[in-house]
Length: 344
Image 1: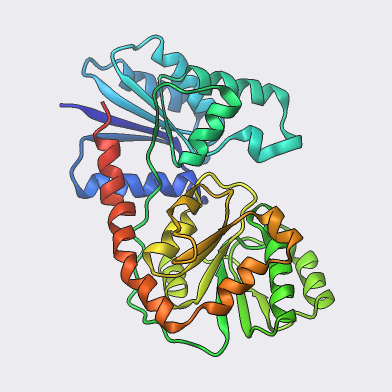
Image 2: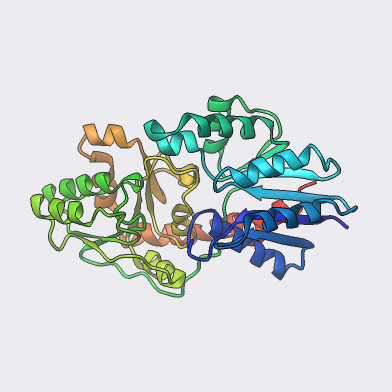
């Protein structure tokens, strides 16, 4: 009987990103009694002992599907080297990001070359979005044996939506530059100019930008219009917030998926996203959200975004909510885990 080996760095302190995806996959495998073993690198674990345990599993006679996830280069490189020795297994690397893009000008050349080697030579690659697949081909010329399996969410909420006099907009990216805080602030400034009654609630890490945020609030006279509420570790609270909001901003400068978009869509909350989010392809423009080129919006004072928010009403929100069930089926962990379980 085929067995799946899940290999990944999965620190308990990591509440988002690849670690959260690994936990979701494991939970679903447990629910469906899928034959798997998780070999997870946890914080403080001796790395030599950990790598030795992987080798012991690869030595076993029965064929396994080996699925390693990116979060650094150590594990992907190690599994790539082991695949040359223990050839009976099938090897898949799930790519959650591209270092060269994430770091930009700060990228160290030695790591770029290491990433290039791994992505060009790993037997099979799974990308979490079509955008990531395209970027992988453009940057590293990798075309063969590349598959797309999206991230998943079982987000749900029993909260009801009520139309409010003030448009309640949410962002889960905190105060991080890479999550588009600059675009959010400029958009807020423009909405205030056009006399839209709105309130933006920001959740997530402050990324040491709290002073910058306070200065922008004061400078642009946005007191009471944009507020930062810190990190939210209770996922159900996140889902309830999205379910009752009028819209969500996802203005990442580059995000290979951005599960917040998926959560928004399955909860029936319109999502306004940059075109640099892999999950943005799930949005049906001007129906359950809007996909924008942030650079163009900067030049046009966020006209498209402001107009979309202006037109949001209860009737439109109810139609979006009805369509959410389609997303629930496509993006459910049951559906996504099935794709991993079917790997050969």
